[in-house]
Image (cartoon, rainbow, N blue to C red; front, side):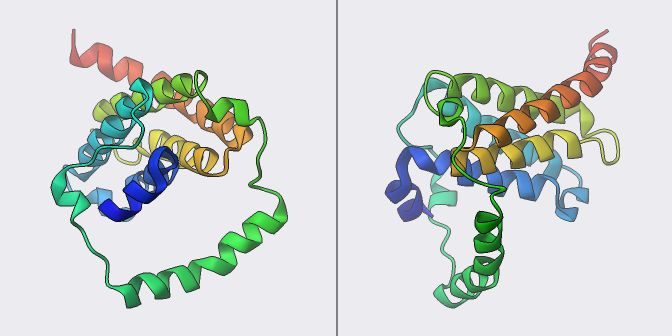
Length: 174
C-alpha cells in the first residue's frame, strides 16, 4: 500500500476516498463501530487534502498492508471491463478540472470533512450514514477522474447529509 501511495502522490486522494466511501456504504458497516472508523479515515484523508499535503499520510500499519499479486490481478481483471465501459460511456471524463485543483479542491476537502463529521451522529441511525458515504464515493470518483460534475454531485450529497445530521447534533449537544 505504501508503494502505491508513494507512486501516485497527490493523485492518491481520489482513489483513497473512493475506497473508503465504498467501504462506508458496504454491508460491513453494520458491524458496530465500523461506520465511525470509516468516518475517521475519511476525516484523516480530507484534512490532509485540505492542508495541501503532497501525498496522503497513512498509519504505518496501513502502509504495510500487502495484497497477494494473484488476488490483486484477479480483482483488476474483473473490474477492468466495468471501468472501461464507464470510461467509454462518457459518465466519467475530465470536466471542470478546476474543481479538483487548488485552491478549489480545498472546498471539496471541507465538504468531505463535513460529511465525515455528519457521519458520527448519523451512525446512530440505521442506513443514515449512506448519505455521507455516497458523497465520499462521488468525490472519490470526481477526484480520480478530475471530473467536476461528480464533485458537484458529491456536494449535493454532502449538503443532504449535513441537513439530516444537524438536528441530531443539536440533540446530542443540548
